[in-house]
Length: 384
Image 1: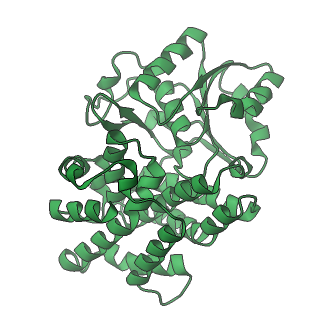
Image 2 (image 1 turned 135 degrees about the vertical axis):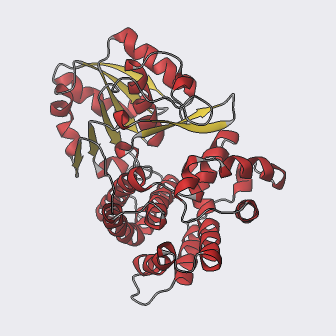
Image 3 (image 1 turned 180 degrees about the horizontal axis):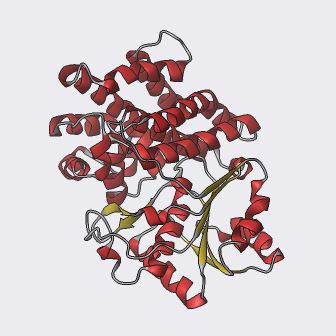
């Protein structure tokens, strides 16, 4: 057995740990580029904390999911302002933008030199500028991953800028920052977190360390996701979902994902569809396809056995079976009123392009087994 595990240099977790930001920031530089979501006013507490200790800041807002242009322009702004480190504050979009900008601050040249799929995928020549990642949603786990997902409107695709150099120096996870999330956003980001525990657990690249994280994360998400949606101020539920999201990020960065994210990347590049909602719409159908394919083509697979373990983790019943895991996920998605893919403009006519792009996605490499084009087409059709 051989495996590797890499993550952020330092993880701070707990209610109120945002107050520890100034000390962490002072160790990294003198002027921070603070990358936020579309409403930079939400980052005012961060700016006030930094100002109170004499740290200079420049803000950079990302209106939606970050694009290649956002990353390039943000790095240009950071260099012009003399920023020597980056703070990402927001959901996965803000954190991914922060990591990409930090990489480009120190690695000049064409962004396409470093991008997967549409670029040359060259390794970064220099370590990225230091990053402090502060999530305000419990979904992507981007605070502990080594990549940044960027949309390229010209190519109608989302791709990754990826390097071990991009792991944040500090991941600061304060669950109280998620209390203001709407029920809808709590549901879609929470289902993204759940997906990012299920896929690494079933992955063909799973290892004992990622298993431990996934098992604990799944237990917490299974008992807390609905509670966090139904009662946003539920402190325990919010804390459990923040842990689940963090553990999912740790797991996916080291064991990979699967067909849900294999589809979600191309769909997010082609249509104005939020990532978490797309993952939620796909999850029951990908799980069904994987279970069926494993039974047909790999009946001795460890991943097939893990479906029963997954059922027990999700339902809390000691003798639950794989079919019960599928029913549990199906019922959860229905209860949370997750829209089908057609709600975002996808249609049957888009199937060939989406399936072709999904088949080539890097996330597919960690799926429990390769899925055929027919199986991928069936997943897409059922999720419409």
